[in-house]
Length: 436
Image 1 (cartoon, rainbow, N blue to C red):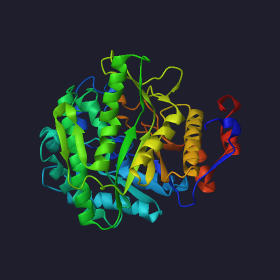
Image 2 (spheres, one colour):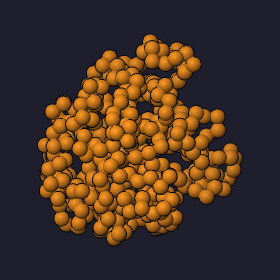
Image 3 (tube, one colour):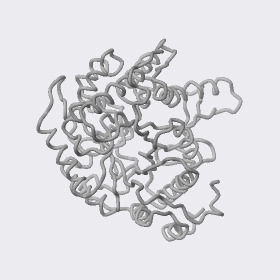
Image 4 (spheres, rainbow, N blue to C red):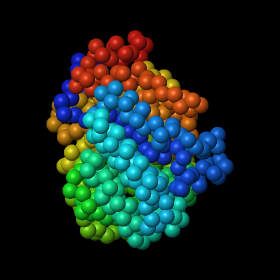
């Protein structure tokens, strides 16, 4: 299926949604009222002890950034809203920040760009986090109240609502200790995962009750777990454990309404969880190996595969398998993140071309995929990795904040313009040494 020897072109529907994604904390700058800001103040938590600080200055420069997106033929944009700006204290909403985000969304609409709005992208207000985050019973009601206010304020502007970005990434903070709160506790991690699923159900009901417009979804990342040592019983066992925690447990809950995390005896039917999705977002970067003998029990690099600056191997065949898996829910799919960290923009062109070739194949086979959003529009603060990884279609000089459009962005813009990926276009952007 993936041999380039027979590849000529991949076609995309005329009404396909194209664009890129960002998250509020990673690009805005000046966010100091959430748990990630506190985490950064602890020495050794972030590479080179970097702090997000002013980030890309997107909070002030959003008009400039959206103009760049429009010039690159983007007709959709995924962005986040910072919960701790909107609701810095429990039960209190900031009218000035509410007004700011309305101007942000209006700037996108002015350019004819559809809005995918992420309500929770890893960050939480300090007041919410210090109460136990989603491990606390009833936390879903606080989250739903925030989502309801957003729906009331922005229901006339938002096209696609996203309750959570990658809820399973809570494992990075509560089980593997590399994100806030830096814990290694399986029971607490499972309680947070279950609490987020309850939060999703409550948020969906709140959004749909407050705004008849817009479609509600959730964004899940997925990786296929393979044993680090083929035939090793413990490695295989950890594959099954992590696949349930990372992907399968969430997909089953969203399909059936039953949350099941047996390690905490959590097995309950949640009203309104089944059938809560109008669409499902798929983030895909890499597959992983389970290593029962390592401290974190995972190994990102698959031997023999190409590796990005994040230490992630990349294999587009895994993208196809992820599409097959997510399609089981029987609802429209959007690729809401796909990209690579690299200083070699030729590699980014190759990455885009290989994954869009897979996407074109899946479309031709009848999978209901309606959009592709690249990660990321801008270079940004990449959480615990700081500013080292470069994911952007647009390069950012962190000293001057100057933006510079990369060739890979022009490459994607041509695909969007023509609604097709062709061998001729790939060869025009890639030197011989990078071709397939």
